[in-house]
Length: 374
Image: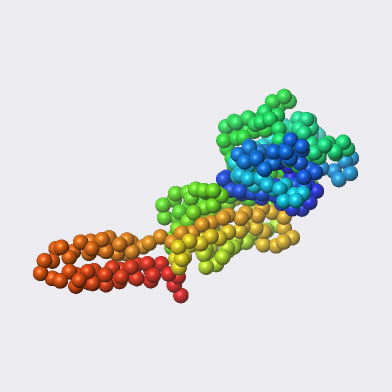
């Protein structure tokens, strides 16, 4: 289990970004050794392939009250290492894990119209029950800080995750951690619970939804934490934004990367001004001069004063030969066999002619066609 808390702004940002990132992308958490439980600490450098579950931990600085926890996401350790007193763990992200839906009850005190009961979702019951289960998980060992969780190695069934097609309403004694087949609903549920904390009450939530080739419509699959694209091609990035609370103002998100490697078609920004939306961002990959380039496409609030999701999508762009280049290569192979077809013509003359034609096809098909244009 990996925990990120409300004790530092960076720790809170980690939770927002882990929730936003695409499946199979990679993320790194860091802990001081004194906050890692003994079992995990002893095995830290051999944790590769270990399943993880990421939680947001709501902690009171002076321990006036016990912590509460909200699940965020599954994952699997890619690598773990120690640098001095710092333990670093890189993990690959899996699916969103959520609490059950809150039960909705009548709340007469919340009504503005006498005699009419308002409806109030009860978020605290599943959170409190989960806190009781996680309290049993090993802690770093400080007698007065046993409620503090950072990284703990536990049995997979310590708090079981139940796979369901839909997220059910909360029921005492029922499942607490749910991996739903409907990941949009899981995202909505996670943001709903998080938004009822002081840490995320004003957060702008969005997440990666899809990256597809605009010509074929086929989604681009992530491999080893990287999206692999082709140069001289167009793509479309889809982002799902969902705000649990009413939206009364407009917030701008900016999109950026190395300009010569990837370009946004149109204005490189978009606004969040509604409760939910599927934002589509067209992208163009210009021709590359070299064989391979890597870049990071970043999506983040334009103003540093806005708290919101930061997406950092790693992209690897490879230059592909044009059809003319392919024709040149085929022609070169064909011409290599021509000397035998011209018995009366000197072989060297045929070979020289073939070399000139092949060079012309290569130059115009590769160097001229795939090089960046002014």
